Amino acid sequence: MQATSVFPIRVVVLWRIVSALAAAVLVAGSLIACASSPQAPAKPIELPVFPPPPEPARFHFERSLHSSADVVPDDKDGSLRRLVTGETRVGEGLAKPYAVAARDGRIYIGDTVARMVLMFDLARGRYKQIGTEDPGALRMPFGIDTDAQGHVYVVDGTLKRVQVYDAEGRYLRTLGANLAWSRPAGIAIDESRRRLYVVDAGGVDSEQHLVRAIDLDSGRALFDIGKRGEGPGEFNLPRDAVVGAGGEVYVVDGGNFRVQVFDADGKYLKTFGAVGRQSGQFSRPKEISIDADGNVYVVDTAFGNFQIFDREGRLLLDVGTRGNTDGPARFMLPSGIAVDRSDGRVYMVDQYFRKVDVFRPASLPPGAAYGRR
Image 1 (cartoon, rainbow, N blue to C red):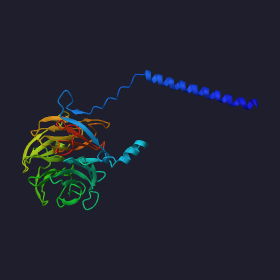
Image 2: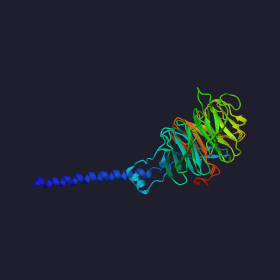
Image 3: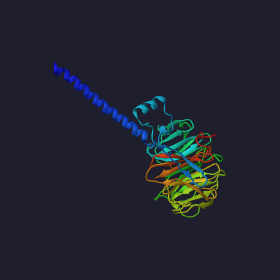
Image 4: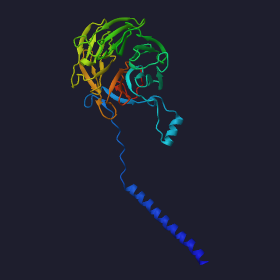
């Protein structure tokens, strides 16, 4: 009988000791927590501004786009599930983006590995794939441009033609399939003259380094600009083109490290830029765009940035830096650029980091809607 009565007493005593120790630990922890100084709130990440202070800002880095998840709003059920499970939201990502076009809050990105154009409608939070099915299937989308009706023009470097789609990605027609091309790469549209300019980059074994003007309605070749060479009006591996308000054609002459300017009839006007490592010079210039004020934007792959020139070729600003790791306004292999003239935002493609960085002009307030205001 004694044995049975002693055992419960020992259990009770042991339980009380354990409980007391646990309480002491909790109290001590509370006292330590109360005695410790409160943690300072985390310092917000400062996004890059160009030029940096104390100069007045002209462009702010706004965001990076890596996939459709950065564009399409998350649904409530998915957001709640990820909050509980810790899942990461996954979208349709970029494989190897090259060129970009922008109009009224909608951007079109050519992906040379995925063999399609991805439409990111930032103004409406939508995403679409373009050129995935025949007719109009793409093999190697390079240069892209749009017109006032929202039509999308894509240079296919493998099929050697220009595919045309409506704003929603429905195939409309093909241009230039009956013309002789070496390596078509860039494209620019002159809507007022109903012309399409296609840049033929040629190659080491080709003499066809030129820009070809095509009638936008009939698809008939009108005239060629330039030939292979180093002199004024001659090209060495031209990459891209853009049309100014007066019909001037600005051409990135990649192998000659310069931008050449021609009038609407193909007459040589002037050149700016030269090979070098300083701002205002070029090392590996790629694509080109223009804003509503006529300023010219040129991507340089080796510099890891884009440079802005006025219409006379005077340097205004360079934006971005070269980096080995991804980050805001950091680039390893930039290629494409587009300015949305409706709001002034600039879109810059990086092939290596598989992204598009967005830059907001300082005249546009933070959080401003995409596209027309």
